[in-house]
Image (cartoon, rainbow, N blue to C red; front, top):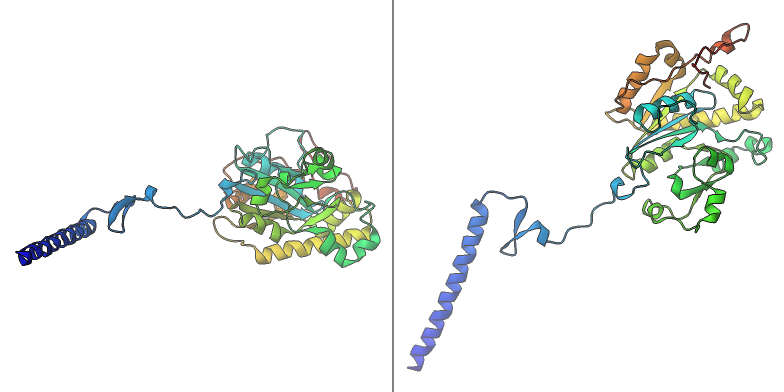
Length: 335
């Protein structure tokens, strides 16, 4: 009798094992023949939804940081090469600025980066005060290390992440010193999320390294493009000396340094493709070809607009024997 009971137990265990083995085979077979559902998957023999599994942490994207624009266009060029004109027409065409007269187009136009996702920046090389600034002496500029290390910044982050002198604040560059001192002076978390550890500061007159500035934004998911405008070097120099820097030696050294920065960008940044990271513009071609040429630049930048700010040839006054230049009507003379 005991042997019969033991045999019954063994038989029951065998039947249970066979039942679960058959059930497992059925589940696996059904998984193989059922229509693919990308929202579900077989895990540990059980059908579970993706929502029930632990998600991997997502890589940081631009959408995670509201102080970064989706699209950034930074206009660069030597002083008196047409950077302000190009900034106005690009800013208005992209919607980064209102389309009305009397606006200042130095520094950055980022008032609509949150709602429209675009920011346009104006960086002449150099940018800021005149070369007569007390910190920017002739002797210092003669030292190449001064221009390369102290007077050149690798990038200009969002305005919320830096503090600048009064000149930069007037042009909407970064926080002004008064606002900064009156604040908590604690670097915002959004700036830390962008990889910054301290507030960015700038001298009164400085160069922005095009390559590193654009790459900094590209690395953070921003569609960033440098728009470099070039003008006849002799005319650019005469115009620069007449307004931005009346010291001819300093003006020449600045132009040499600015030219090196532009050449580096053309060598290292992407110039081709649907969204190039650097585009070259000719001031002379702007005046010769006009609107069609500007619209061809828009196409490279992915801008859908027919707006082109009026441009008066600023070279005329330097090649006209009389040296005179007339501005007609509302058309302005940009340098």
